[in-house]
Length: 115
Length: 117
Image (cartoon, rainbow over all chains, first blue to last red; front, side, top):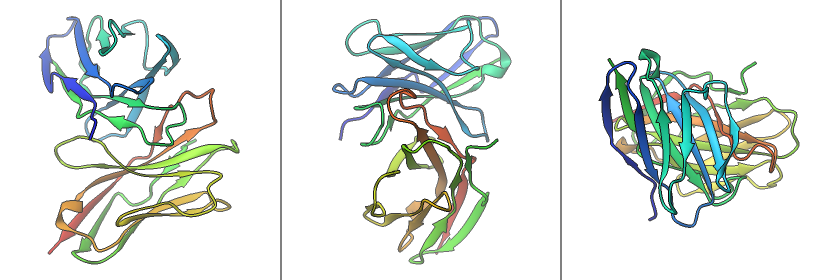
């Protein structure tokens, strides 16, 4: 079964450092998303991406965050200068349609720890 | 206001029994989608089932069924014949609108299910 691949699975970084989280969505999917889940809390939407541009972003997704699809397969989330409160599990997801009627497939997540 | 409400923080269920996880939602859109995801202790998010707001029949996927009551704005997940491997956190989520929300999912707080032998 096709899957969304995220790397790395764990990342520890120092406060103020830049991190790039990588994702390979399902190959025929057109819509891509990043979500985050702070430990013990609900999953929160960060950004959606379609046709090589951001479709929607949440209040969390401020100027410290950016996304990119540098080639035909990868989808990245960059945090420019990490803060302690950025520590969370970050999920990449993709869907064939914007309505997600076939489901949104999530990756296994990257656990980011900012120290 | 909360868009998705899951009122059961945790539940214990015996193996082979059925369990119902509650989910209520709040939207003024006519077109929306409701989703359930399972998150085991390993952390990944596994898609279980989808119900569209215009679907007249309740969605079913194997042992999972969604009890969709549109007038009550509820979308409860029923897991039949629980197995030990069903122990996990379960999230209800909603996608509002059609094209203009571009698939943003809003999640509830989750229900932790523990299946006991």
